[in-house]
Image (cartoon, rainbow, N blue to C red; front, top):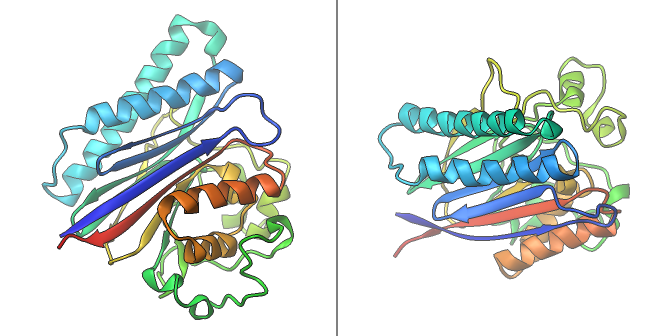
Amino acid sequence: MYIMKTAGLSDVGQLRTNNEDNYTIEGSLLVVADGMGGTAGGEIASSIAIKTIPEKLKNISYTNDDEVADAVKQAVIDADTEIKNQTKENPDLKGMGTTVVLAIHFDSRFLIGNLGDSRAYLISKSAAGSMSSAGITPSTADANAQTAILEPIDIDVEKKAPGAITRLSKDHSVVMDLVNSGVITEDDIRTHPLRNRITRCVGSLREDGADVTWHDVNEDDILILCSDGLWELVHEDIILAVVGSSINLEEICKRLIDAANDAGGFDNITVIAGQFLKDN
């Protein structure tokens, strides 16, 4: 049996006056939502998502992979419907929506669901003790460095290497479509003029719903859920370094947010960290 210890933190950043991010931790369910659609709309949309999704999943128990995945997808659809209903009642909120990235843990498995460009990362347990095993040297893995000038490591989303950081979610965004079509590289995402344009979100769902994937739990692995306010400024190698050199989950969240703010803090920043531990 495995348990999951958790911590979360959100920050308005250095340039915004309001925080359109929301997050919740409710037992085995973690949700991060990054709202959009104006000052009021973004906050409302993300708050609807982090309220509706846990409500719909509060009595969920593991049956089989497909049934759980379907329940998660339906919870996201219900949040989408609620956002659309709010828009009908208040036309000033037209165009509001939110990204969602979530994790739900069942003993030795966990599910990741996402829409938009908020992300989920998994960091293997050997990262804390062996940065070199992930190809990171002290000169490139300084967790206090100015992250904006560092080069990101090359991540294969289909493979998990020991002592490494692995992206578990796939962005639904214009720039990621350009990457997938070979027009730009991932290095270009952070400076591209269309980097904030997403192609799928809660509040404007059509045929495509949430992507869901199942993953196995390994002892001491750490799960990071975050809004784009973190990953656009703090590259994967720095996230790995911060996790590997922090003493607890609360410190991981705080140091990651500090790193994003030190690099400019251009957006709201939200981080949830979860660690899988053997339940003895």
